[in-house]
Image (cartoon, rainbow, N blue to C red; front, side, top):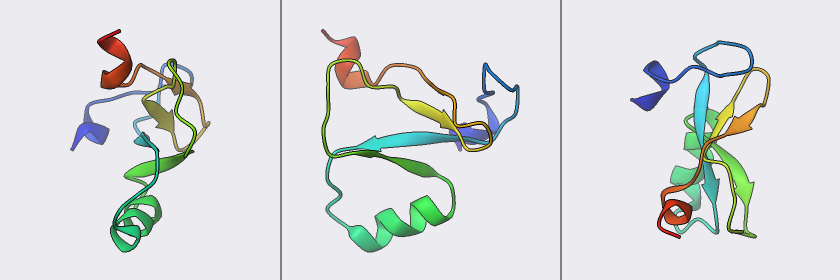
Length: 71
């Protein structure tokens, strides 16, 4: 749903996916969401300044994860 409203600040396209950080619990659902370009894999190592969004066209990353905003 959010993909329709977000625009990449780098290339101005609307093909935006949420970056998934951490280890997925449901790998089938996770792999399908990646295939559908709803999410992209951020990796298992989570830091204090991980981006939230990635453009699936130019791969620009930006934003702040909600967990990081509370700090």
